[in-house]
Length: 359
Image (tube, rainbow, N blue to C red; front, side, top):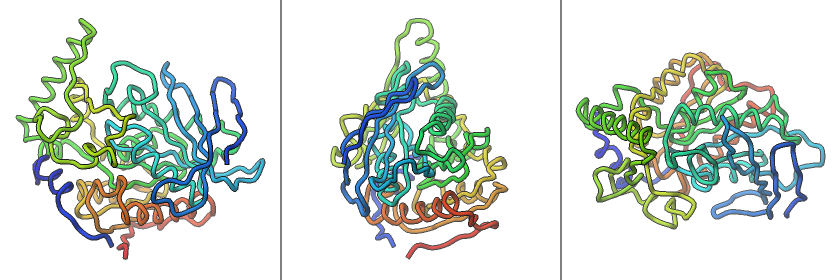
């Protein structure tokens, strides 16, 4: 197995060629403000209307954005896909891009800031908690079912990178999502964590640092931070040359804060995405690549889940699928087709494990 630095450096450095504003509305206890119709960079479809929403999650207020096809008919009930992105990120990064592209394809989508991130509430800031993110996804689903233009029986979920594992656990716990898709899924377990973070010693060191940071926070309120990403600070959560997190033209946008709470380490390192697989029974699509993160774990997850599943295997590095072409367009096409089949029509996904190769 590759070490964390070897894996992420390979993801970053290896280059393979890959295959009108609406009226405002209000819901009780939930603010919804329309914004102008937009068509984003690299967009391949129609215009999209963005609506800002807020909803509660475990005592905090979360802020989200709903992406709606401009051509929606009054009174029309449509499916909706909830989109969540990589760890430490905010809704304006890869999650927002995929939500917009789905809406351009005619599928309404919603993304949001998890607790402790972006515009959403919660302390301490930039606290990466798989458990709390799973809860937030469950609460986002509950909120989405109340939206007047949503058919509450046709909700889907798209998890990019780490949110693939979070969303899988939400589904396993009963979140009423009828279809699931992942893009560049990051699904670690105890064995792969050791291989990525310097073996038992590296994992133990981070867990001990995190437990000490939590004890300090609970006693004094002081939060210990390290960079979320750095190419020079070895204490960073992601210590490697990653253009996505260092370039403003990619993911280093003003809405994202480049910090990581040290007290996040124990829960992150002990999280097991694969544990959810035996309870995921909804039609699921995995868009992945041999050069992306933990491809063997994606295959293990798919093999362990009892529900219908499809593997769409193409070429490209892990972070290419966050924002680069033609990777995003290929992924969106596969994901949109999956949701069209599983949410709009009665045709199910393949009942047995299938694997296809993108051209």
